[in-house]
Length: 397
Image (cartoon, rainbow, N blue to C red; front, side, top):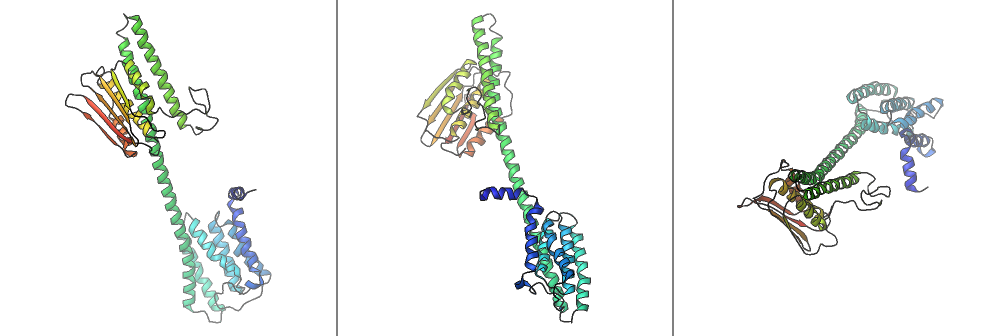
């Protein structure tokens, strides 16, 4: 088994099992000859050799460390009792070091009744100090008792600092996760708006026109065919978007809709397919002139998709607010940027689909701005409307 695999198995173990080796290490270290008599000496009592009672004191001091994260108060209580017995009997074992460890763990892990726990520990320290002072030879001064109490308080404070640090880190991660979720929801909303609004607008315009073609069966059939094709294209684009939202997207098990393969690219259309978008708009009754200059570079990052969305939104608005007005689409490919300009005359008519709150243009401005580009949209003196975008190529997705 590799080290990484062993680490994963270790992390899956219960926290008590993972803390048990530390408890056993303290217990074993207490019996090592080199550490005998080198433990915490508090109260100026003479050293006493280990006896049967010493085994109980060592067990109380060391073994509760196995539950220091699961039951921190229980751990600290047992360790403190073992420490008191250790000092009152004069064993002065190395296991006394477990008390600061228990204090740090409790200060770090305890979530409720923290103040009450600190008060009870401080109160319990007083009779221990008095008992040690009465049993000792008087070598331990009040300053020594106070100093030792401050050392224990510092151990608790270290645990409290670790807890505060962990809480701040959890809050930071939660805030970052919330921001990511918000950005993802906004991205999904923009994609749905772009896909649904354009296709539905085209279908509404085509369906409205079909009502006036009942006397011309050939043209009526063409109009209904265009509505059907637009609906199928909308379904395909929506499936593509849902595939992108699928956690299995990109794996061999994912199936690309409309391609018949499991490895097809379901990414939204690139700027090279703007001509298809223009043809669809023409079939909806909008006269569109299309000009494309330059050759798209091999890699444009997200620029080609954003350029496509700019044209899509501009043509959708032309269909809704200036139906029948001549519209020109110019796309210029440079080495470092893609420039898009869509101009619509002001002589067209509003359709029944002409509803919206400007979300589309606001979304485009944000998309282009994220890539470091420039976006503008506004009316002209002749009543027309122009959308311009300069999008740096090779930008990160």
